[in-house]
Image (tube, rainbow, N blue to C red):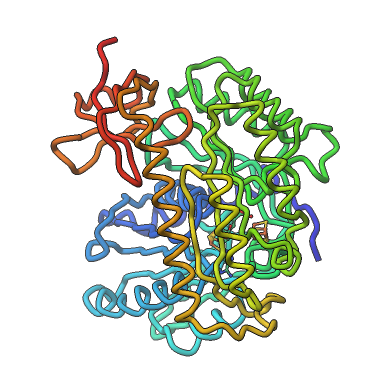
Length: 475
Ligand code: SAH
Ligand code: SF4
Ligand code: F3S
């Protein structure tokens, strides 16, 4: 059963002691570790913590599996496709193990919270030494040490299969190795209480729990002071931030408080559930000058009947009202969404409602998915008579419409000069820099790599479905 469990300083010290033991054990020669991440930004954020721990344990990080002494795979369970890829890639590690018998393979993340997955690893993936869940990232050094101990005992190849169901963990003060010095994920909460009928996330990530506002704000201030220019507040449903805490701070309050932190940075957030996207939120966004003019508001479907079956707690009318209100506060708002095609029982008429919603809202960008049944969710037990081939036809139609709208919206930027944050480099020598507008639109530019981490005015000269292309305007 869910119980909030705040990790204490003493518990963290114990983990640091495991780091010291691992560091001493691997000291005789340099050791390399690789962390591979699937899934959403929550997993990216957890992988940063895993990398932080691994560095504290004395490993150097690598992206080269053939060189690694330790490989951690952080998995996603949201759709079957993601799971298949993970099993394929874990299976392939048999060759790495053959070359390096000392290799340690750890599988973590959302997939491991499913009994069926644990069973499959136990039976068929002998090369996996450690299985751990998202609630155990805070105690990774201990799990790694216990795995190494088992391996150390001569002839004993027994594995450690953890991934416990306890789900109330809130841990502060964990080490974290961020990829970029410009963009940072800032997790403000974990878990989800919404139980959309198609979705595995509440089953694997546990109940919703928020970090304390003081902890979030301290981390945001530290990021701003360290020069981060783009901070994304993360949660499965950020709009319900603060529920269960006695601080009386909700998400719009938190947004304003982060906005009040000194520094030149953009605040983004993901994801907003339409049922809790209120006028208070839109006002806070509009009045927070650092807040991106971007709202990711997953609609999932345009059909009231399907929305009800999905347990989404809003209907088409309420969704459209939220969009209209948001646009009233922020006329320049960039709006993106997620849509599922082929939910069990969806008909051609339901699909037509989705298509018409998309045409009515005209999203700047969309993430579209064909429904994937997830064991243990209510939708997986609903009758699903439409064939995969027919769903694919619907999906392609939706994608065609979505892409045409995105391309039109992007074309409207051509000739304009927009403020962007240059946030990284690309592989394209002609346009070597990547940047984002305040609304989150991707811009490719040519310029000196030293510009990464700075704001610039970009003149947009061309566009595509996915991106804008431009040149840095004279400052
Ligand atoms: N918490 C976020 C998103 C979580 S998963 C939210 O509520 O918006 C990201 C997206 O994956 C979802 O928005 C949904 O569109 C899609 N998704 C989730 N479960 C799915 C399933 N079983 N099949 C297909 N798509 C799914
Ligand atoms: Fe899944 Fe719904 Fe929670 Fe999003 S809000 S994570 S779609 S259950
Ligand atoms: Fe996947 Fe887990 Fe995120 S299931 S989408 S990695 S919360």
